[in-house]
Image (tube, rainbow, N blue to C red):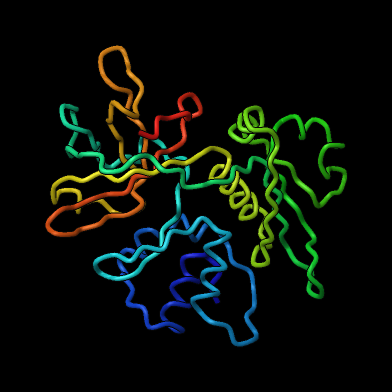
Length: 272
């Protein structure tokens, strides 16, 4: 019996697919994912890959096809500076890796959602849910008439980023059904993840550099120094946090696809 997300994924991949797994990477990243729980019983024939896809649509899961095999790690949306593994900078910037931007910035999430309603804990019979969590602004928390407070099974989480986004873009609601979640802490984490993921525009760009970029891993957090993107500090550029979304090695050249971590003060970035 296993219920941690990482353990469940590993069990399904090992027993119901032909995928080659990187056991070492699975173990090194399992802690964060195993804090999230999967509560379900599969009592009919299902396609394993499709079932895993249903989990990745809900939970903050990143499936990585690494050089040594497949593994899973948590998908970070707002990493801290403490998690940064390297600094990438364009020519003339003080960085571990010198890179050149190859593409314009492209929006990764065309739709913005800043009010997340998560239904979880399905009834044994029927398709309705017994519990609900709403991630929204403090306004809704203070005025239950705007939401569904009043029932003991409902919860409202105030999220500052969602609140700021509602001020800028208006209230945009996304409803998510989570049939594999009964644990309240997992529901809170998943609902907050979707709020952070969707409440601001997220931009990606591709940078090329030397083979040293191959030492990065998909999902790593890096500092980016690019004068076309970063704001100017007193003496140097203010680095932007970014997440490595892909690493491409082709014709002797290494490229990385970076997703900029949204910055509420500078999220209106140039796309040139």
